[in-house]
Length: 74
Image (cartoon, rainbow, N blue to C red; front, side, top):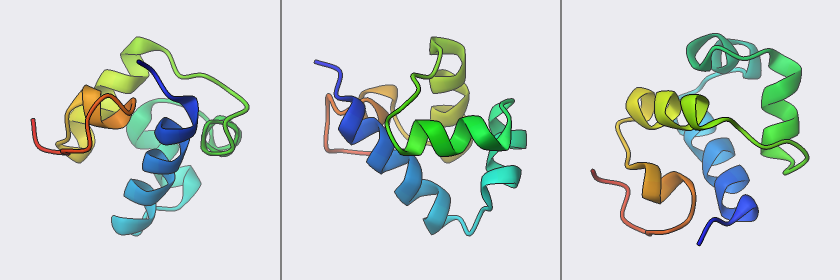
């Protein structure tokens, strides 16, 4: 089951672990800085294309990002 709370938390944590600003992270994900902030706060959903791009960028599984798994590896 999808968990917006887990997704938002994991996106924030991964961004911080990689020392990325919201702006740099947004460029990598193909979204604007303000969208990153809204996603991290759980106020905006990400499209499947963005979720897949983020999973690829951080080399984690989509299931991990959306909270269906606690194991980040693919």
